[in-house]
Length: 356
Image (cartoon, rainbow, N blue to C red):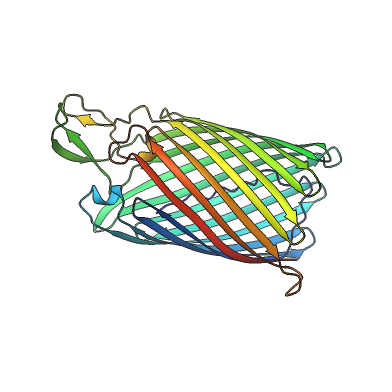
């Protein structure tokens, strides 16, 4: 299982003070497509010198799946283990912040090296923040049982953002991200069925083939508004499009409310995308295409996520200790994916943190 880490925090305060922190949590993902992922995480950060912060984290994914992808390729079950380690550094100098990080991720058939650099500048009495980031990801793709199979994927990404404090209770943000991917972007285990023109039988299966180049753009606009005495509401809209023909719209709302030592967060995320231009519900011998895919993430679909998170500070145990629990329920409706019409599931999380 491969997962890209987004080194992006929306609605961050325009004047950020680093903290010493320790976070430990475990997330469990499960769905009705017979997939379960258990992900423990540990993260540390420390103010190591004046204006300087060092951070490190480790996360693992323990995957067990008998999903449509697995079954359709004549395999009854798949287990996998993914490990990722991150190291980061940031330096605050007057109104500027410089940051960098390195991520190494590995599993039995995949390895990835990721480098990210960032710069943020506070302006106008710290009411405005302009930020620029760059990341490079170098990936090596293998296939279990085939020592001769070795493919590479390179991903470059640039993002810019403008965060503005309009009033003491209202913050807004605009951002743009551009990504360029070059190399092997299919799955080495996914095979595509080529059927007879009348769709009554499968003539043969061929390995999935995707274009080697993909260029992505994403625009985000968001607002963060403090309301009432101890609550706030956040909303953002994201528009995404790429050279594969995928276009997507995301709307997300979050509401935070605090009662003494307890903070509740409610969220809903609506997502819709048009499928890739070369995606077909059925590929037939009557019209073969240069690119064939059975990736449901390239189909047309919509999804909805609703969730609640509880954070509880425990000052009588330790002045900086807090525990948290989260439950997100999701639903996917695949509009033109032949192998699966819908998917439902949950993400649950339990953890603790010490921030001081």
